[in-house]
Amino acid sequence: MKEANKWDRAGILAEVRRQGKTLTGIARDNDLYSSACRQGIIGASRRGAEAIAKAIGVPFRELFPDSYSQGRHDEGKTSSNKSCNTSAKAPAISDGSRSAA
Image (cartoon, rainbow, N blue to C red; front, side, top):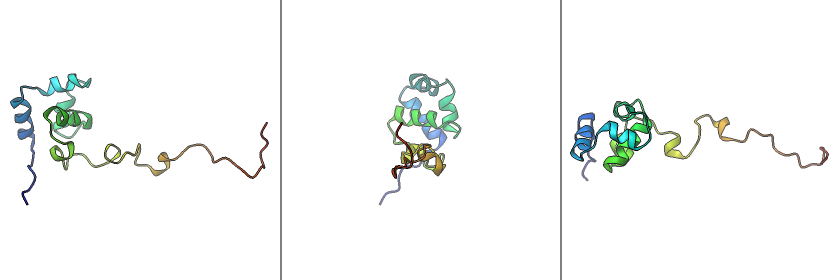
């Protein structure tokens, strides 16, 4: 079985340029601040990294397998804090002890 292609910063940037794109252009096309993709390529902006992956047509996890820890974007959770993934409201009391006024 062949090992998946390992992407490094130089390889990612070369692919961006090969496709006639720029990191700034990719950021602006995705309504991000102009340096978001430059930050994304070094691990400082996940949204920038996601924009790069989309722009060059490579799955995010293949392009950045170790740079960003798996979290809410990968698992559908909104927070890593378990108490934040539940309702803030107390459950309704159904034994009739509260009046329905």
